Image (tube, rainbow, N blue to C red; front, top):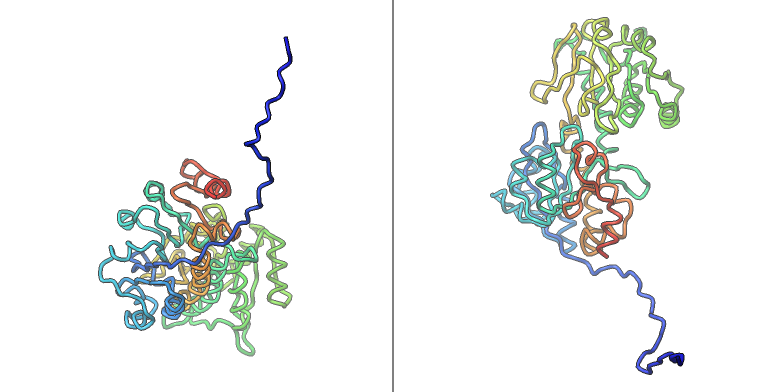
Length: 404
């Protein structure tokens, strides 16, 4: 049998292809909606009038629901003068392609969401509900959370700012409830010549613990800090720059110190869920009558066994004659400062989103923003949430790559 010759056609030509580079998309006009928050203890607003003015000067549109800024002492007039449109109907705000909120999405707001919207808001892991998450998935929402959003240095800028505010506020709060005006012991936080300083115990050496320690030291108090992370204790000492009394969380030492303190601060962070309880009810019952507990970690369940959630309207309760202040979301009590801090992070991010041609493009170009995305076009991309609610997890990097 004759061997068949290879067939060569002149119509084929084999050439190398030109390399195609990833070119940034042209800028997009963003339509941003800021609804009024109706949730418990939430007075912050995510963009200040100054930030809105910058967005509008850069060709974007902003719709603000009437009275949205009231909690932070920003009026509708402030926003309309900045160039925003004031909406008297919540539905109009929810027509916007990007929603910027200072509280998590509520069940009633889920009904108003439009398919393929983008939401930038906190999620409050500890109180997140599965049905809200599922509704957002059904509507193919892309969602970015404050808690997990990272900046170029790998830090969480909004969480850090809120922790700085909470830490700085703790000693002001404690001072208030130690004074006689609020039926306290009548003790001045800090100390004056000839009188031993007020004793402050801080449990947790994170950002909240550091800023509490700074304020307490500035007031002249004696400060002792407990944390199980030697790294965090070292960092706190280095940042504050003075030699401090620090210890790992050893129950007997902690109980002994709490017995004689005037102020105890719970500043442990619950990274993956509930904060561990490190102070038992028995230890609290041995504390001095009239001493004050400020449990900042109540947002994640609290680290004192006697803690229970209170509100800004009724912030304290007494147990074993010890005053407990357990208001979640302390920064909201200083809403104007907190709003400015959130706005300082979000405004540059939104400007960049516009320049990059929308949220899809900025996620592609900026790796650090991916850490904040927990929903992408309806797919759940946060591993912790998928584990907790037993929902399907999808890797965000694979999702983005498949859509390019």
